Image (tube, rainbow, N blue to C red):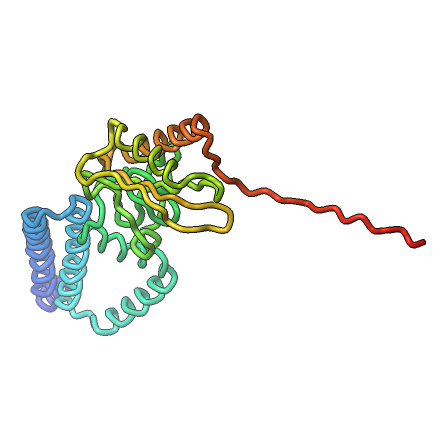
Amino acid sequence: MEVIQGWLTLYGLKVAGALAILVLGLWAAKFMTKAIQKAMKKGNMDQTLVSFGGKLTKFFLIVIVIMAALNQLGFETTSLIAVLGAASLAVGLALQSNLSSLAAGIMILIFRPFNLGQVIETNGMVGTVESIGIMQTILKCADGRTVILPNTKVFGDRLINYSVRDVMRADLVVGIGYDDDIEKAKEVLNRLVEGYERAKKDPPPQVFVLELADSSVNLAVRVHVDKDDYWKAKWDLSEMIKLEFDKQGIGIPFPQMDVHMKKEEQAA
């Protein structure tokens, strides 16, 4: 009995203090986590980022509470912190690529270069954004493929957002032969784009000589359309131009090879 009383006298207050720190600390961690998440929501931050920020905050606060409770019990927390630091460094080096994707995901969610439902091009892929996560971004391509890209690839590569503006410019390059009439070709192209129902009148369509290429005179066709009609317009105009050029006798050059046979004279 005296041993128990001695133990309680020696450690009772420390244990009670440690329990009090745990109870109050965990309550405070929960309260502070909710407060931080509420502040993030008021700042119109993404729900994924709000959830991640709340979990990260709660984790660090719980670690601090546990360290304080252990310190109250008399444990030497300095060495424990050193061990945790070394372990964190080792894990960080092992998961370097994942941590890079995590950091890139946070940057994407903060700066919002694109949103759900928008059409973007990155890493040679064009698709509609289906999901923006902490570690990865998911695109749905026009052919039905689902592309999962690590956020390091998305944030570190050139990114084109086709959905930022309501109106987009569709560009086509049409080649004609050097023997064809440039003015006639331009007249045909102007008539087609001006009569195209999806083409905007302001700014007006443009047709002009772009360059004198190796085997063709390249004409540029530029027409502004609603963003939802962008691909449809390019497909429609490409077909319309080919069909009309065939009717008008305007050729579209294509790569070809001329082979010249040299006949050697037989020796007398």
